[in-house]
Structures are given as structure tokens and as C-alpha cells.
Length: 424
Image 1 (cartoon, rainbow, N blue to C red):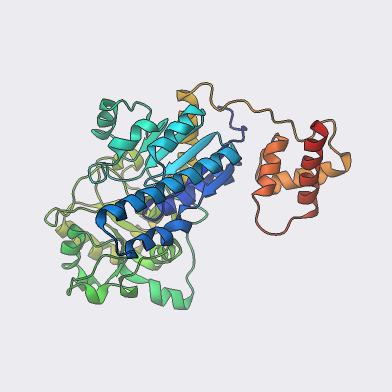
Image 2 (cartoon, rainbow, N blue to C red):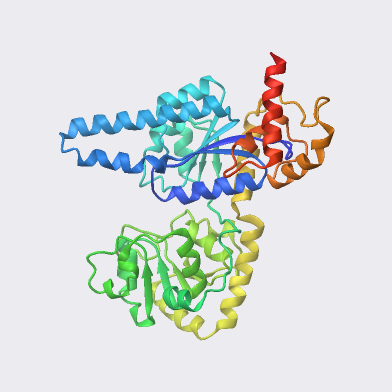
């Protein structure tokens, strides 16, 4: 498709969970690419959803009310679709969209895509929902793609996770943050069984553990930071930058299986590299597709990990060389901008008539006041829109802004209102 084409994209976030920050990075990338983006902020409804648990009602009524609540959220998404008229609705994993809502959008010829950023073996709801999406993007290849094909889902795109360079970047920590977030060896993530088993044998390295779900482990408890609360995305960047060695051990529910040799690559791999931080990461079957030898430092066993921690602590120049090569690769090939362009290109190839043509007059039509042109060009540049943006899309971008309207914002909105009255 023409890269100058401005798309209207509605991103539907989940109520909570791991795909929430991923969704926010998608929004940032799409806006930076010059597209018009609206966001359905499902997290705003999370406290109300949780309040259902406090009703002290029977299990069947509880389930009914939960489902009714999710159906209401789905109807709210449809209302956003009717108002915004998007070219695409991008749903993150666990987004509150029902079968009925997806059917409605398909009937109205609104293209829908889900980025399923979860392990298909553990989270099996894809079997129910994948057939209702026009594009189903996944972070695993075989046998997942074949399993999707078996249930009639053929519009499958392999779309690994990524980093957002204006967020995941090298930073200098002040003295307080360096003391709080810095250290020789750190790990950020949840307390899966394989991690608990491994880290009990690595505490002699002065390990700092960040993240939740580490309760009940008396050996590791002294090493868990911030009382085991969830770490924000902003704090993650400080931890990555402040640690000499970041351990990146993918999750496994099997305590005796340290390196599972699994397929998907977690977001931490790309985020650490984008920060210019050094990481020791376990080998994954899809890692060779994303990085070449020498761009990341790997380990294959607990003994290997223990040895490499000692080695790299003693060799800061080698740590820096790995970090520089990894960052260069991510900035070139593994950003959210790259991923969103892949999604858009795949959709355009799969559906040749997409996106549908709009009756969207050029901004500078014959009735456009000459005295406003220079200020309007500055506004278009400020909003990150292509020079050839249509007038309707410019109006939507102006309305989507936060804060007070500038004189040129007001003029554009007044001109839009005048056009509507005049056209009648």
C-alpha cells in the first residue's frame, strides 16, 4: 500500500495484563507513523470489573454478571467504531471483544486484527476467537500456524514482539536511582518455577529480583525488591540501564527445565537490547530469526549461566560490545514501527480493496482561506501527518488532541463546521 496513506486505526486495549504495555507501544508507533489513532481504554473499567468479585453472590450469577459486563464493553467498542469509522480495529490479547461484536464489524466491512502475544499452549482461547478476526498475528510459528489453519484461520501473520526506541533507550541514572535500581546482576519478571529453582543457586552473585509472584520462597525473599510489587514500564528501563548484567530467563512451568528451548521471544529481549543494556538470555528456537551470533550473549544451562555471570562481570568491554551490537539490530529490525508496518502491509496484501476509499477532500481545496495555509502546514507537521492529508482526517487529528485549542486548531474546527452547514 502507499506509505503516505493515512489510516484510521482503533486500538482496543485489554482490561489488564502483559499485552497492555504492548498495546500502548503500538499506539505510540502508529501515531509516530502519521496515522490517526483512537484508543479504547479498557483499563478504565478494570476497577468496576473487579468490583463484581465483592458482590457475595452465587457462582452462576457472578459469571452471568461478568459476561454481561464484558458484553457492555464490547458494545462500547462498537460505538467507538461507529463514531471514528476506522480502517482497522487492532485488538490486543484479552481485549474485551465478543463474537457478536466481531461479526458486526465484519458485516460492516471494518477490518479487525488481533495481536496474540501469548503462548498458544497455555492460553487456548484463540481456538474460539481466531476465526472471527480478519488478521491474526502471532508470536509463534509451527505448530501454532498449522493448528490455526486446521480451524479455518489462514490469514496468519508471524509478528514477534519488539521495542519502542523513544521509550526503551539508554539513560543516565541519578545517584538515587542508581542506588535503588542499579546492581551487578538483576532479573525482572514473574516467579515461574524454573526461575525460582535457578535463582536459588545464583544468589551469591548479589542478585536483585524485580517483579511479582515471588511469595512463599524464603530463600529468595531477601533478594526480591519493592516488596514484590509489579514494576512499571518506566522502572523497567531504569533497572535495565542500571544493571551490569540483566538475566533474561524465559518462563517455564516446569521447575526441572531451566532452558525450555521454547519458541516465542519475550518482549524483554528486545527492550533490553534497545536500552543498550547487557543481557544473558536462554536460547530459543526462533532466536536465530531475530538475532545473529554475537548480537546477544546466550546460556544453555545453569552451570553455563553461573560461569558467564562471573566472566562478564569481569569483562565490561565485552558486555558493552554485545550491548552495542544488540541495540543496533533492534533499532533496525525490531521496533514497534517495523511491526505495525508489517501488519498494515500484510492486511493490504491479503485484502486488495483495503483500505476503502474515503470522500476526503484535500486540505487546501478551493475554499480554503489563503491566510491560513502557512499555519495549517505547521499544524500538519506538528501532528505528524503526511503533507497530503485529507481535510476530514486533519479535523479528527485536531479533535484528538489534549489541552487547550490553539488559534489554528480553532480555525480548522470552525472551517469544518462552516463546510458542514454550507454543504447542506
